[in-house]
Length: 254
Ligand code: NDP
Ligand code: 8X3
Image (cartoon, rainbow, N blue to C red; front, top):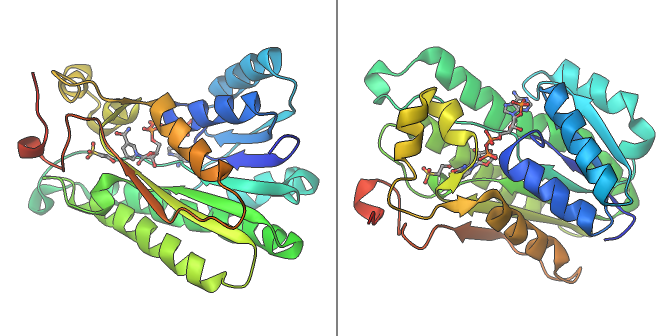
């Protein structure tokens, strides 16, 4: 892994940030992306001070194909060397039942979680194919297996991530490129704050349980990346010990 290049979307927070730190600790050079430039610069400074790796921040919105293309073009010579793509940028919005759900929330989730992931995959993959090496790790969710109440559209986007991951693995048969879907349950990041835009409601999600941390999820990602080249982890479902499924009935709160 040392000396290779990884591109991580959504590195300005949560899982993406933790994955960046853990990869840098292993000597991996990084292209870190997100919309918040200040956060990417903060991460770059931290990583460069702690580890001897190269870090290039790229600021763009994964929903826009034009922005993705322009950003990657800026660093084309580095993108050409990317052997690890972490498709992590994503979000949930709202929690209303479908009949009263907000169309703009649906658009944002679909455009980010599905189309953003497709844009980045389509743009980076040709380089991996040319070099016949690579590993794509997608951030799905336990909600890609079962539907949490009020999260039907979010769940649909993560079911799409699962389908795209499986389809890609089939379409890449014969190439030395691995494809993995990581499916976390409740994890404490900015996710709940972005989803609910209400600090009190967001904190309630973690009440009475020890949620996964961003580092827990990053360790799972690193473990998948670390397997020998002939071993491909298709999917990895990871929850807090207190969570046995989705929805209140499957979370034990003390
Ligand atoms: P965070 O909110 O902490 O981080 C989300 C990241 O995605 C941020 O860096 C954000 O960057 C980036 N992002 C969001 N929208 C866009 C966009 N349009 N363009 C570019 N970047 C974008 O959440 P997590 O770290 O928890 O989430 C990471 C992934 O894991 C998501 O796909 C999420 O669905 C999934 N997940 C999360 C779980 C959880 O409980 N936390 C559980 C299961 C899966 P910026 O705002 O700077 O653009
Ligand atoms: C979100 C997972 O368990 O919070 O991706 O609904 S959960």
